[in-house]
Image (cartoon, rainbow, N blue to C red; front, side):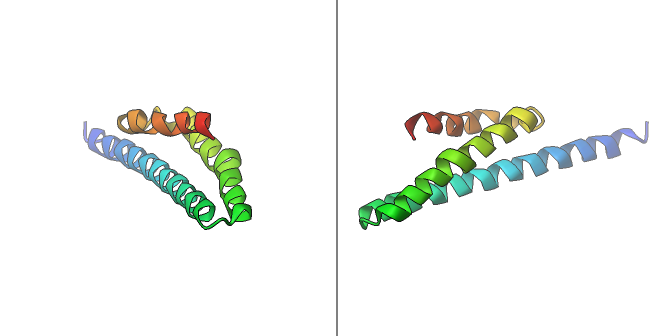
Length: 91
């Protein structure tokens, strides 16, 4: 029975690591979105295009892949991160 607590602690640590990865991915999406907004606002369309491509081709698909493959482990963050998969519809 002494093995139970270390196992539970290990599972919780994995859940926290995956949640942290999801959080960092979400922050990157927000940063790129803000970058695109500010670039458009300043009429720097080349930089806006780069930010939008980054969102569309790398950041959002990567977060979706993380959620599909590992999201079930950090189940408590699933609801919030489904929203970011929906963001792709608007890109």
